[in-house]
Amino acid sequence: MSNPLRGTLRPAIDFLDRIAQPLVLYSVFMLALECHLYPLDDSLDSHPFFLWSERCVALIFTVEYVLRWMRNSGRGYYPLTTFGIIDLVSILPFWIGFIPAVDPYLRQIRTLRVLRMLKFFRYNRGLQVMTLGFYRAYFNLRPLLFTAAMIILLTMFALYEVEGPEQEEFRNLFTTLWFLEVTGTTVGYGDISPATTAGKAIVMIYMIAGLAIFMACFSAITSAFDEVFEKAEDPDFDPLDHFPKIRRQQLHIFERHKDVGTTAAEDEAAKEDETKQESNPAGTQ
Image 1 (cartoon, one colour):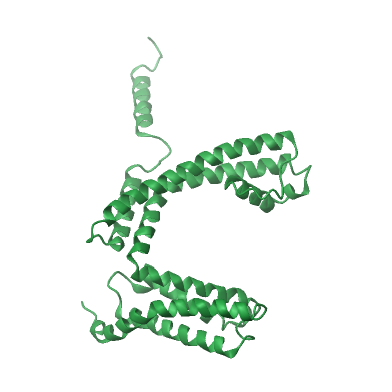
Image 2: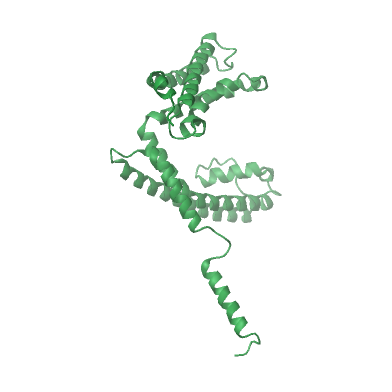
């Protein structure tokens, strides 16, 4: 059944669509200007113009959120859609600021206004295509990231046991994880490093494994983007329609090859062994 509000609210939403992108750029610019002029103050202590400017922008985006919810986009229950979540994120930092418990963190919360730039996803086909590429790559990256997590955890605890008695930094698991992160990404700040021979050997193995995982991840992303960019050359290609299609395809593959602990070949071999045992219970040749 059609929503009678769709036609009524359409002009207002069309108007908001025209001003949404300039408003996002304006709010980010005002945030940068406020931080530059009042680096030690939050929005309540800086010039009132910045506070009221933010209130106006947040109010407009809040009205947009309510109107879109009332109208509904037709792509599902609006608050749970991608656009609905993005629109909520764009106004949430402002409304969170009214909670008394977060007063000490207002400076940190106002930086979340930058997330409003996610609203460009609604209007920019290029961003939609890029996001679709990462989304397609995600399903191939999951096993790689799981493998990387195992390697990092194994190396982290190994360094904790080997280097911890020698260096205080490695007695802290978070610091050890930080070291592995900057090492695995080849950043290498050099602030800490293993001192023992065993520790150096562990890190050498970790760097080789980490580089292999990194190259595999890069290959998975490149392959996904090549496929998406090839389809995006079609002017009728709608990136938004392909997100659920990719998800359904991956769920179908997962259901067909779901890991149940044993493979079909192993099940068949077990049945053959049971059949042989039943036919020859005495074990005679």
